[in-house]
Length: 172
Image (cartoon, rainbow, N blue to C red; front, side, top):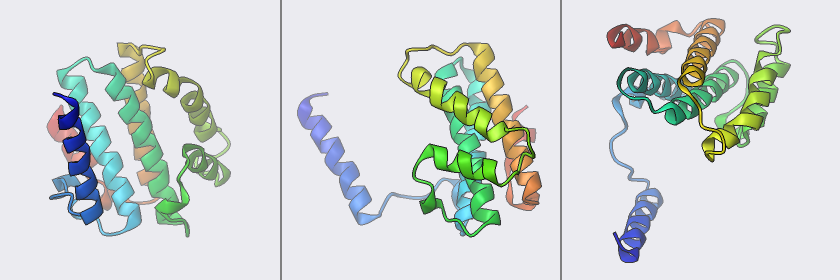
């Protein structure tokens, strides 16, 4: 692939974004109509991908990154669903963690602040490959993401809108 091919690929993506013609939406995100449900669907999709990666590869970097994303999307789902917030209000990672922490969703355990501290210190090091996550960290992060997601869905009483349960049952 030469430079001209790279330029062509960039122009193609720019055209898709400018025309807002990005193609069919993936099935797991096709039914959501509200801002909150889109965030919930994204979290469910990321967790589903983590499950697939765990059963088929040892791609620990992707599992860790998707787990962080799923946690953040789960928090954002709760905030948008249960408050007057909109997804556009959360353009910085730390905003989501600070807002969920201030609302006491996890009581006084400081869970969001603790995850945010880990995210801010270790995620960049893992993402930019200064640290290389091992299997135990990848599994631990995925399990943490599943627990956070389940808790946020339960706290928001949104079981009927979460499709993780049915996909989770089909995976294992």
